[in-house]
Image 1 (cartoon, rainbow, N blue to C red):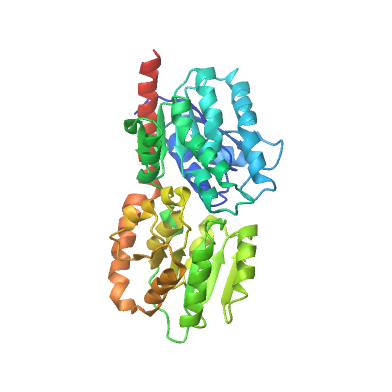
Image 2: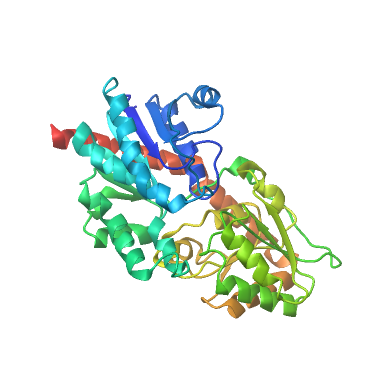
Length: 405
């Protein structure tokens, strides 16, 4: 067993409960660190019942309360830009009394603070990138995210490991690792860990739709502009015309992007929509249990190509057939999986793939569903992924300590 470390774990999202997307990963990473006997100090936005959470996970919380943080907070992007300044100072205040052995950051926003702390604390730093955060902005409306600004932000995010000469990087995908290598960071110091799921919350479900029941096409997540663009709209339009009565279920916070998308869908004659709103992570499987097809209709961007999309993992684990656009990261893993059909970046083609699953007899794919679910559970459950990530963190600490001695 590695020596016990005092770790400063930095995040810009509330630690618990997970709010969706990459936020769930932090809980499992921290749990693995604490299980190994490391003393973990989590620096992040304010949460409820902090004392109870500390006891539950065996950690120390240091909470930011100057303003509300979170993926659904007002003026989110402006707050994200200012947050690293305050986060860095929070860590420095605690470090006056407790010497940290290592700084571990979650996401690019906290990576800015972590990078600056490397020099000020003289300790190894490991950055974890569950996505290329700024890359998603390529698909946002230009009036919100001007393209030259987005490109500059992407370049800055990719430069963070080299800029601060950090000791290791965990990346969500090989595609993101390749981009960081292209930006000058050594490939041997990057560990692609992919993105996992909690198998206890996504049990395999045997499913067979009765002929009189309408098909249900489901999508869950944070539902931002890159999730719900022209491809998603054209796919819904195509399926509604070809298979009238099909229900489209969008599970997630009623974001501005989702509200705008739902408003557009009302222009499609006969379109059947369900939008139950935010559902806690441990209850999402209930929304998948009676579904026919799970979808990932992401628009093409650097961010989406790098994303190892959590929802497709959860679809397959639950025994649900899936349709996705050909994102490099998930096609690299699921390209030969019979339970995932990849369209082109075209809404009508995406819709055809959905109809193909609606029409596919249950008996033809159920054995494939069992095999695919078993593979996902073996390889992408949080336990093996977090074991890999924390192993890498400990190696990075050992090598960083030798380099600085």
